[in-house]
Length: 117
Image (cartoon, rainbow, N blue to C red; front, side, top):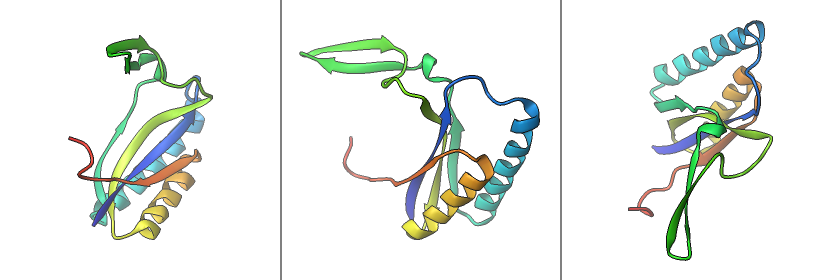
């Protein structure tokens, strides 16, 4: 089976109030339970805000590090899940389930092996 990255894009700023966030988290846990039951779940993680990021970049043979996100934007990746699916159509169906549960933009992208390291 192929593996796919499901990225969750969220707006910058404070998280929603508990009365909004709690039902979303319940729906998300239901999707995660369904993923595990189907044997499609590989791993997942949430990320700290972009302000905690450090960017490492090569410039003129010198490696520079800077604080903050790589790109200034109104949205950032707030979390991700790696799944196994037989094909892109199946992975997109999981992406649709995440979008319904979380109500935020979801990106589904196949993982590529053997090109790094």
